[in-house]
Image 1 (tube, rainbow, N blue to C red):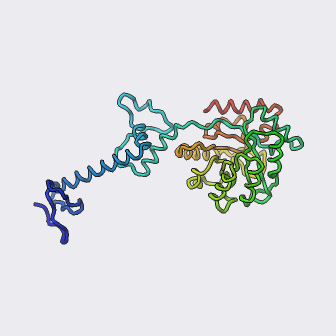
Image 2: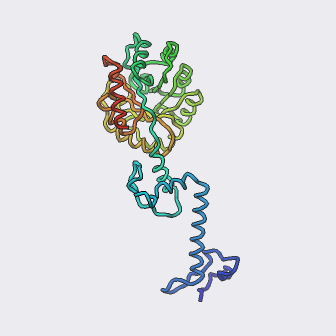
Image 3: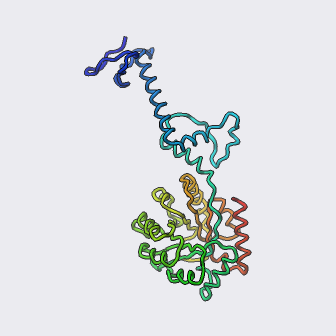
Length: 336
């Protein structure tokens, strides 16, 4: 006998009838022996609904469907054969919430190839009396980019170069990408000058911009790629809100403002954390490192996830540019 329904609710219909009462309107039987036809129908209907919703979710999200197949070992394939940066764990089937979808995406995108190695000598360490010749020589020696460290004696306690130097190098015939690191405040006033002068990538510090998204949009509106710079003590959590908008993340492994500083080891942990975020996003965002990069530590830096390497004194103070760049590239390729 079914228990009485609460006052005001309609009659409970038997399972054979078409208009089934909603699950919450069916009375659960009392007593120690759980069960009863109406309660079983309620549970079965809920199960059917969950399977139906899951099926619709998988049909409308084919990427997620493929990811589920990716993490479930095939009967003919031992789980040990599944490659990936993350350990395999038993799969529990159920409705995939946001956390489950994010985890599956992380497993999938960790297999995306990294960007080609780029070595970017910083002209801050070059001989400015013959800057055009220095840049020509370092590019012929195997460098990929030209890196500008722009300081304003306000955001950082030093004063370096402006957009006229970038424009002069372009007029000199430099066609390689010019990577501009703005250590200035405010940022937005300077962005158009470097974009018009021929910059390829413009990166800035979030602390120097009142509106980070607006500055990113400003850089892109001038036809340049946008990068965000994290100081040694800047937390990586800020990337959670802007990473999809970026083309590059620059990690400072020294405090900005001066050249020739020693590498800060904690930058390796920061690189690993950011590499995980980039891989999870699945967008080809470059991960750059600047500060204390040398031939004897660039391998460990690359192993932590960096693909773009700024080096100033390590290259321009060497007697043979080609030799030190070749050593750096070999150390990177050995761990990739």
